[in-house]
Length: 227
Length: 221
Image (cartoon, rainbow over the protein chains, first blue to last red):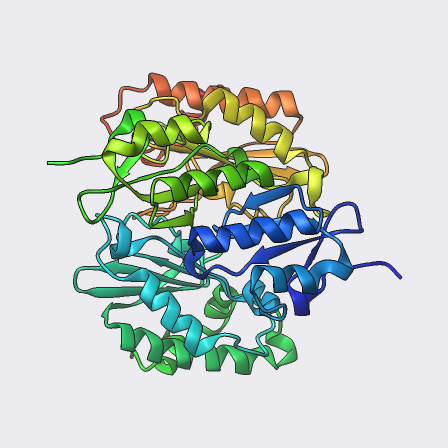
């Protein structure tokens, strides 16, 4: 049988049609040295020679054999099933005010809270990329994420519907000056709405930006309680 | 007051005391042995954390200023130009080397462009992105110069940004072979290098100001 991606394990079939790339599950792309060593150990143990820091700031192990995927996750200390949702709901985060002098908000903490509350958020039929930047300079590129957040002195600016890939779209700002809690509440409504649309044939597999264009910004604002 | 130390690739951190450095890892591809060396060196100098960055680098965070030279000496990697007015990075995907979606050799071209342009000083930051297929996983359309691989060749775009004022790049050419695509990158780069725009004004703003037709004429499209 021809091989394909193993979505439940977040394993991406490589060009050789034989091995897979898997991602280290690092919240916000941050790790300590010990975690790094576990990743290096797993890579070596399972014959991986090359790691890749991806465009979204993830760390991928390239060339894992199918039978070693579970063990490689285990060796790294991550759960195998973490993969799917990781692919679909990755949160790209800048260092925020934890490390960066420009950071206006605590991006890493908000990412952790989003992850705790929504991960894994099942039954969404398209990918949901989230970008959280701690200042206007937007190094996590929130403008081309399905859900983008920019931290400003007065609170979070929330934008929706960006995409950077095949059909690029610049996200639209739907709210400003939000607290962390307000962001989570709006996201709850937004994701619930999106999940509902995901189960209908005519709106299946559509990215949030396409939905936004189809259904209109007014409707989205109403659903998110922002009208 | 402490500031970033450009020549050491050191970025002052929030504590106004320690620095982050981002060694040069072309395309984010790093061999496990080199990754281990990076970890060992980070540990030796008591780094607070490592962070995978948007520029496909691994930043080592929380180094003391007095350790910076020793860190670079030990780690045996080049400086990554994560800050300053220069070509910040050439982002590229695994292309036809690893990825089964790859239509063009993004890694090959990416490595060549990286060698040629990474770190070159300019009047504003300048980002280059190379994606091997139309899924465009590193968003080349939102870089100063972007290459997207299609079965018949490269699409080259110019003037993208993804910061405070996001802007999609304009198409400079399609179905270009490797040599023609690199020639196009060179033309756009040299146009920007020679332009007398004030510091920190990115290419997209210049294109908006002069108009896309004028820009195309200026770079010979």
